[in-house]
Amino acid sequence: MERHLLVRLLSDGGEASAAALAALHSGATHVVWDGAAPAERLALVYARRLRHTRRKGIETLGLERAVQLLAQHDQPVCLGQITAADQTWAFTLFLSEDRSALVAVTGVRRADEQAPPNIT
Image (cartoon, rainbow, N blue to C red; front, side, top):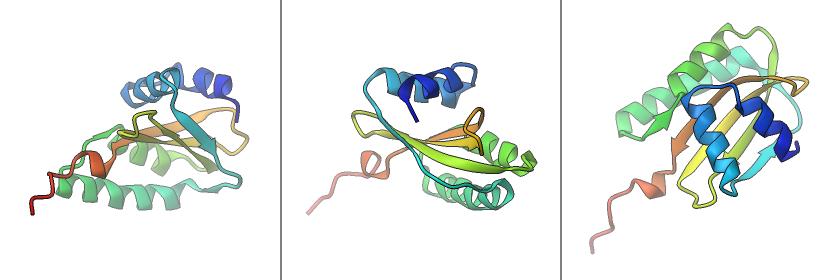
């Protein structure tokens, strides 16, 4: 998917969309994968991730909202990812099957950016 199309899709979103958009404007890489998956199945997967990130204290943006939106969405979704140029954040995009609309977006601070220093 071309960058300018992602910019357009992310322009009307909330906090996670704004952060993903800022990352794109700052040189982030992006990919949208082929194929689609049932939104309700992804809602279950990302609900587990939400519990995991909360338990581990991993910073996220929009993850709870993404789970809610996926659970309500009755069509398959395509997945994409935006990785910040400095590698500190990764954003997962959930797009309509025809890639014309953004269903949800979530961001997670990369684990290696949160880990305490290795003391030896």
